[in-house]
Image (cartoon, rainbow, N blue to C red; front, side, top):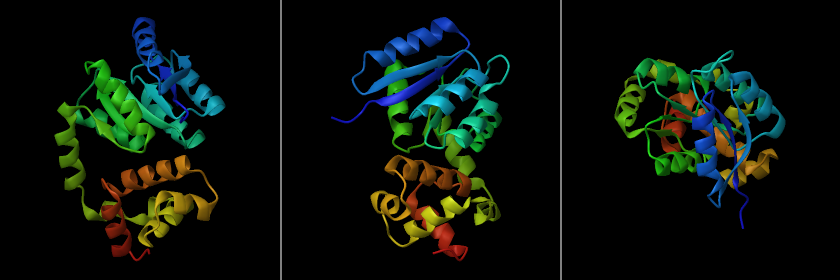
Length: 213
């Protein structure tokens, strides 16, 4: 039996946070390992317990969800950030994804959609609310190719991308680099975000076009 996906919840509204925690706790494959009422608490908890997923509100007192996202992806790179927010404007969503979030849902989504999104980001997928998905696809496709430079990839991200170009799958990459499968999944997702692509084939195409692999 596989271990449940470990989740940290951060929202300054205790009733909403408790409801979401209760929703998660009745599942067999997800568990809440910590809760926070602001961004600073969320960052500390992710640093200490290294969850699989951090579910963050954007508007919180003190450190907001955007700043917390940046901190979490740096301090706990194995943690996928899923943002749940009332805001659905393009600028906010794009800024959040650039900060390193794996997914973005509006709070009006159904419980089943939220649970499915947590599972998806835990497995390295990018997730958007249906109302946002087409707009985000258009944004990704409209970016100038000059923004796909490999220069902003970390050495680890470049190593993983190079092995992807050589046809290696995630387990092979994990073995060769001596890191966990989960870390590989998260690094691959970071590569996708930085190169503004949606899948492996596109990332490999960009890499080869830039002389890597």
